[in-house]
Length: 52
Image 1 (cartoon, rainbow, N blue to C red):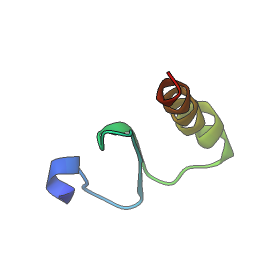
Image 2: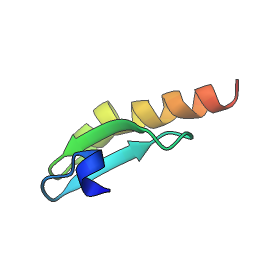
Image 3: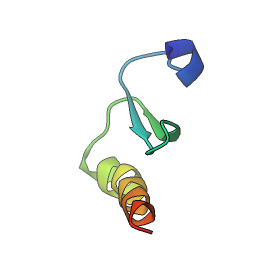
Image 4: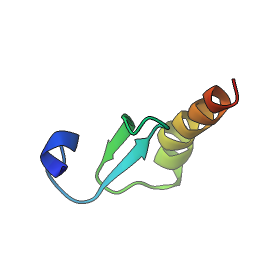
């Protein structure tokens, strides 16, 4: 499965959508800024789409 997802090093963070697809992949450690600027907007967008 890791080859299918493109995993090649740690740490990596994936945001997976409701269909099981990778919606966002963050390579390396993340801090507050990358969480707020990159990861959370994707999560919010997916949440909004789930309600429609």
